[in-house]
Image (cartoon, rainbow, N blue to C red):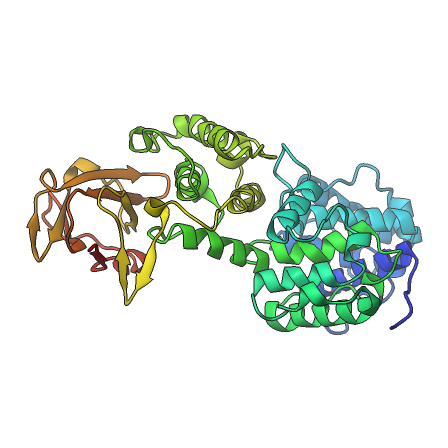
Length: 446
């Protein structure tokens, strides 16, 4: 076992330096001494240009030779960051120029909160609260209350790694507290090798009693950022519950409340009059999401930590991702038969009177449901929609998705769709690959 190392400030200094070098610098142009290397403002301007994906157009001195020029560069960088909602009000230019440790660490942390940690635009909960709630939901067997002591043993990180890619750290439940450093070292290695999470924190620092929460949060944020391993794993779990919908991610597709309603329904919630809810009018989005959140409270006792406004009006993925994992925790092993889908040789079993849904993503816009003909084949022949099925169509303009819903009323083999026609043009639609993958799937009963 390696001896624990590092004072909290030293750990933060090293972690922040590693973070900056990984995200913004490479080769010879990097940071070796955080206190000195930001003091001329050149690297600060480089960070601004990187995060804003454009060249800084203001005045800057590439090789400042005096204090005035260095302060001009620092001021230029701080002004640009402030315009981009980075908190710099309490950052003094003189402190940065002198290499004052506290001010520089505060500045770097403000950069991390703005550009690295998801949830910046969520107003109903802090970024720290959102990340902790997500972690508590995805590894519920471990009691997590903080971002320091809970992570010293390496067991929590091992469990998180295994959540993101099941099987690569499946022995995390039997890891010994006596081997805490080795646990940390292995978990960091596996996260880097299999999940592409950079080891910006060392095993000795993660194992240290002096581990500070800012360093820990900075590292763990790689798991929950957009398209990070935790993001992908959570999306996969949601997709499993909604196999008939191609879910693009935790973004604008959730704004209208439709996917949230469907997820609640999939785990056993009661959604009365689902197909009479208006998902097409953006004015109704807030009402839709509010009702869905109320269903989560009524059916599962889940009190959401995010508001309907953060789901409807916010592009930040963290709000909806946290809500999804809170709902996923409630999934029972014994699901209701109507919500259970079973794959077998590319065939799926459904019950008579069970609602069957799937979404088609169109490459063209301005589609009206009444102008679309849907033909469903039953036992090899054409089936009238009013005869042996209940058929519904709904188009969501926000995401350009046509939802087809039908309820088979008698037993038999159904082919979901033979053709989709526009009544006006009598021409086939252009469907994306995700939609085409749904065509021709057989439904079997009996």
